[in-house]
Image (cartoon, rainbow, N blue to C red; front, side, top):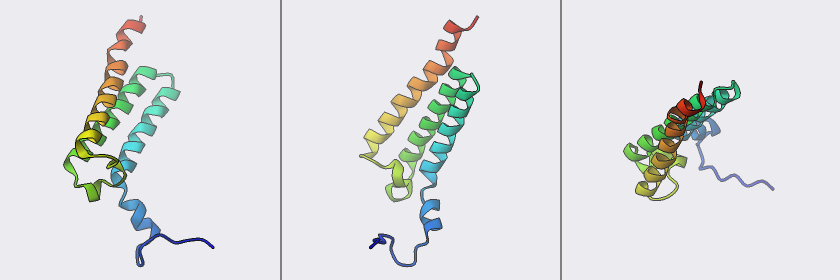
Length: 102
């Protein structure tokens, strides 16, 4: 028998809409992957990095109950990790491009 873990009166659509911060980050990340698939690797990496930096900003300024799935660990750890990985991708995407372009 299937178990329904949703609270009574909460529709599936409302639960998905409540996860808008992670959906926004994933949409930006997906757009970056699309850019990479169009042979613009470094620009796509920069877009993905900016998406993670947006996630860091959302995690920093939104309360934990609103941040939803972005809140995995303590706020400082989440923001630090999103920022480090995001900045690394942006640097990789923008600065390394000059080395490999003619």
